[in-house]
Image 1: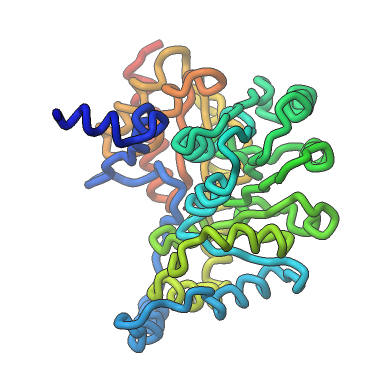
Image 2: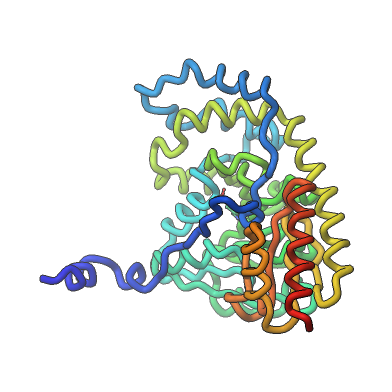
Length: 364
Ligand SMILES: *Cc1c(COP(=O)(O)O)cnc(C)c1O
């Protein structure tokens, strides 16, 4: 048998049909593409962290329930005992785990454009994914369209990123609550950007049993750790916990996360700096002729470039040593759109200069 025959007979058709999620190579570039926190830690904090890692027993399996870390996460989020928390190797793993628990015929619903992993993971599992377009003028939810899709397809899970990636906006709270009330399945409020948003649904958990709140430490400043968590009704969390791999949070991540989350003040200063820079970059972008930047409650900004120039501008900025994200290939509402992550002041400055130069080169 040829290798292609073997492959097509062994793997599910859904796996054969999808493409791998490609991460751009950022070597040698200023990295403003992946919503990372640009700041490191001061030397004395690094030393304390290394000290905390010193006694890590790498010969032993990790605590399968990450009890100490879970306890800290529950305390930080002021979760009472009626709620459960499940930790994942990044919130990506939690999305996968949740979808793996659904029946094959299940529908999964999210607004479009939305976070790409919802669709990628649904597709890989052969579930039915529905992307409902956001409103074109302000990227808010199209509530009637969402509600009629809920009525027609009875989705098992609805994902709402709050704020939304890649658009950056917070959906209207009343719309989100209406969706939670009308849904017969689960509604996951994905609060990956909570540190920058100043808004959250966590206080609604006690009112809606079908709602879950998912968070990650990635955008906060710990993307390398791979740690996400989901909070909600303890009985729902218990079901998800059955299909979680027993040691999914490794010992180094557990110790490092415990260390980092008990240094909250450091991250509060960093996120405040990022929010201040976001305001400045937003203003500068909108002052440029031909550019429209959209309001953001996250650590990135989506902006529209002159018609059919997005890829050219993206490549020009890259040639000037800065990597952002080209969203225009996703078409639809993202036509002509690029997304920039907020970096350090000097990185943002370099980005703005590169963008200006690329616009001048277009000579529109
Ligand atoms: C980045 C992102 C995630 C993934 O976070 P990880 O914890 O790094 O896997 C989830 N949801 C949204 C909306 C994101 O933008």
